[in-house]
Image 1 (cartoon, one colour):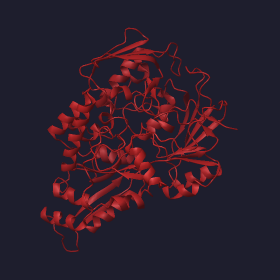
Image 2: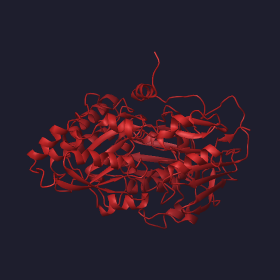
Image 3: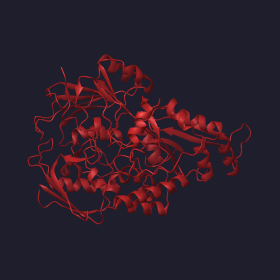
Image 4: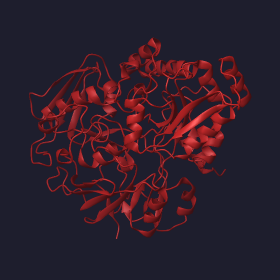
Length: 529
């Protein structure tokens, strides 16, 4: 039997597998060659470069090259040493002991110690949208030994051991980051990590220049001399740069309509593998402070108006699988397979709106809603949702923003009604999912959190119980019960798990070092001559 790309990914993702496809990630039998400049095309332009108080894609992707984490992860999420050379977890799950490498230094020459680890953990607990849940049970970090960090927990936190990569929990220098508030972003000259590359230049609207860290703890890595990240918002321009060789690689860089054509170019590799650390999920987030959207029947009507099959084919060109629940099929241990999509039924949607007390008025309109999209997503998302709303008499007001403005409008100003978000499930539901629905994670100005302003005591109870439950079966049941309530209340309409390919030159080797994919630190990447 021959499988289509869509069927192949559907099976692989449902199995929770890392999918090894031909080309692009690793070449274990070949000896790396040192030298060269890796040119990456990237979008959207980041507003900061370290994911210490945000889960935005830019700080995760770029910061992971500058800041290392305690651990890294194999393709199946098996922890591997990084800044921590070894670690132990007590049988009751209440103590984690990390033994740090000797001689690790930040880029300014300051030794990295357990005090930096302790500071980082508590800053993540306070200010990071996902860290607020993952590290919620950490009550103390013993840093009396400079090379040993002992985390003390009030309750177990089973997701913690997979949350320690540099892209998720970057270890930052206490002596620099303690000088400003957790909600503030460091200035460019304060971007001092311990990772394989050093920030040398950041020209907004143009590029970032990273150079090889000459004192990196994992010498002779990195193999590359430098990394240039070109900030290119236009997808067509990114595709042209890759085709002409002006750029070497990019994450999700080109129009999805171009991917099949690019696969025929011998100098390029299209890597549509599924990397476990990402856990992509797209949702239509609903602002429950809007008087129309407070009504459950209105939210149900909107759900019935969205044709998911058409969305996948038209907006995403088949590079997605349906994902009707908060926890996608990519996390099969916790996904509830008994929850289907609501039926695509515009007549039923119209009936529900009438029953809610919002009949069509003169001109056929019921009311207006502001519709926006995280610019990380295809902007045609907004157009698709707008068309769906128009068919049932809701007048869409499409609003498109650059990334910084989008985050401010949605999470600070709250001047929106419906938003197509890209809130990844990541490696564990406590990290990627809880933040979206946990009432305690509604906080003005906290990006990628509970934007709906959803509150439900039973949901809070289930999420908090799951976050601290060491028994896998019990934990899974908490998450399944939680998904049933969300399907009933619809504070968010979950849409799809998108597949976001990496496109790059066949000369680029070992860019994917494990579950983080191209979002890892690139210390092992090299060019084949």
